[in-house]
Image (cartoon, rainbow, N blue to C red; front, side, top):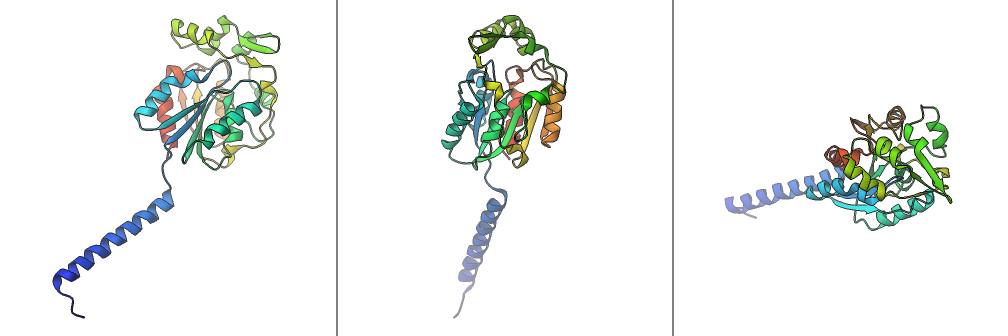
Length: 256
């Protein structure tokens, strides 16, 4: 069969394009899609609104953010609420936790949709580990002395909240956060994680160097143990509010 120059050129271009397309598919298969879904979980003495500023920054960067509102009653209830949020995501998902919620994402992060984990001044226990016993191997943070209990539920006193929990937040704003803090059940801190997702999922950690709620050295220990990509933020326990851009940037890095 005779092939003229025009036919040959068309075939050549088509072949090259097909090869490039095949190569592109191969690259996508090797690297996988970037995660655009972010599920954020709040810690104790707070609610989902503490993520508002981070969420705004993520949305501007085209991330699809979902904040979990969990009841602060038991670890299991928090894990269930987070799993429901993950189930609604349409693809790879970054799971983010502040404070106590680190225990939640350590368990719920085993979900196949979860591509990476981000801990913000958060607990990061191993499977079956007694976090309270681990924390006692480090100097007790001041905030723990300000927890006031009534009828099975606890809240931080106003003094402890403003000084030890939200120490670098403007006083007027910190008082609003104090007013909306979620009371915790006396059963909340008794649960243990049965799995440790950070052992199999890429992890990031933001240490708050001025933290008076979780000892910063404990945060560093947990971040190092999980081999997390770690940043240190000169912030109180609420770095997600006082330094939202740094936290949003860390989440963006976890997207891949």
